[in-house]
Image 1 (cartoon, one colour):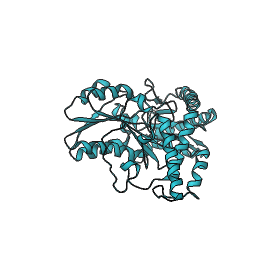
Image 2: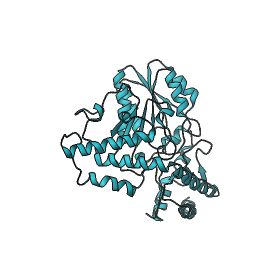
Image 3: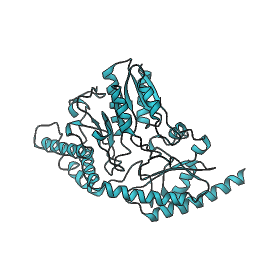
Image 4: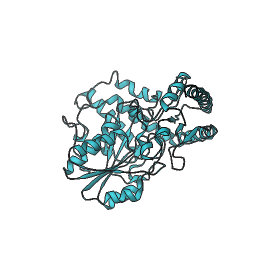
Length: 383
């Protein structure tokens, strides 16, 4: 693929991260729970990576629970907190959450827990007044609002929402998977009780994530077995993957500012060019957004059709969340924002990464204009 513009779906593995991982895929293969030399080597590597991830988000290493990814971490916190409280308790999640939060919430509802969905405005921002009203409902115990949306890139005011939740004694969780690597993410500064992060969004390996929790959080494990991860996540740890997560976190900590500046320049340049195409509508422009993300639609053309046309030009974009692609339905995020169905079907997401350059934007815009012209002519011919 000559132009990759789908970094919100996943990022390529940084070569420096791969170098850190390789020894634990080859010679250092001990089980970190074993007491012999090979096991102790793996345990030291595991703890070193835990310290690196903890340092990135400003917590103690003991607050980091490694998981198989963001989806497992989201399942763990929602189901684990609610299990510790018992049926009769309720939770609130925003209507634009990642499917791993929404589907976990629906599963809890089917098991007898109460559920409220917090609505958003036309830019995809959670409405504070409605959120606070929902927090006041009897039995409300847990709230989950993502820090940044994976489709629109809209950043939520999690600090304010956390303050509201704490005043009501409600546990606050944020899914920060998409935010990490594109903005400063500090656990204490956000005021949350739990936070989800993932390695493959920050140039680390797939299949590794973490749940960061405040000390003393009541949380029941959802996987049972050995006493791994302080009893919170049974199963032999993926040492090589976790080492990669740690190295990616270390690199991000030193390079974050330059990455943000790079993304911001590319997005501004791209949006100026896209706005010159009459059929293009850019979503959530009035809201604070991640610096690397543009979510737009082309009137009269389905996003999936446009995605395939761009793919033929070797340009990789997305029609929304990678975890929800292929369903043939418009984005649930745009639906929650009240975007008309026809326009929502035309949604395309561009998300920049470290390796992108202005020349990539020029190729995208030229291809996009050409494909729009061709597709609209075809549509007219069939009309």
